[in-house]
Length: 147
Length: 75
Image 1 (cartoon, chains in turn cyan, blue):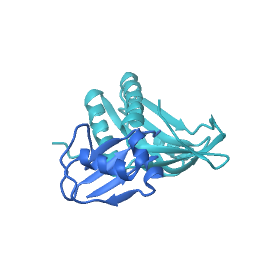
Image 2 (cartoon, rainbow over the protein chains, first blue to last red):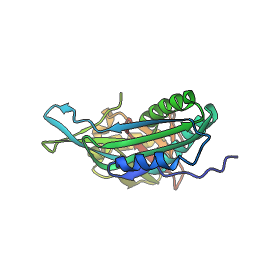
Image 3 (tube, rainbow over the protein chains, first blue to last red):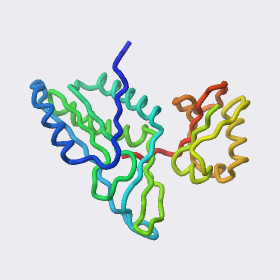
């Protein structure tokens, strides 16, 4: 039986670039790592009918999202030779141009981290109960869709 | 039994949750909710019981949490 505890992945508002720099710095002591793969999701100012996206407001079914994330994490650790994996996703309002998703996967050699990172981002988009509501500059809202 | 609504479904139900008792299974619950909130009939959503997705009709028990969730759009 795995006894790893369920980790929180959610942060309120945008993810600060400093957090990303700090995360990289914190791995300097782990000298078995040879590769980091980082994915950053940024809010786009898409043109929609009736306005431009100013921000996205994220909500989640937290209990379920964290359990799903836990399962995804365990699967990827089984499938790839990974050293560590960190996921941060915004909740609440994130303005266009700011970071709303930060995925950080590390391994000894590059192939594992690159493949796992891509798989992880897809899993986050399609398996985690998170919803984005796009807020337009005319204050109308459009529910985001993932493709 | 607690029923949770998420995403655009809250625009339909106008509330994020409600308490309903005495519903035997998810199919009956669906019927009941779609009668109460008619736009749900054409909305796309999945059902989770106690945080687990269910595809088929599922028996409901007292104390269960049922979530109605539109397609996910995180990231």
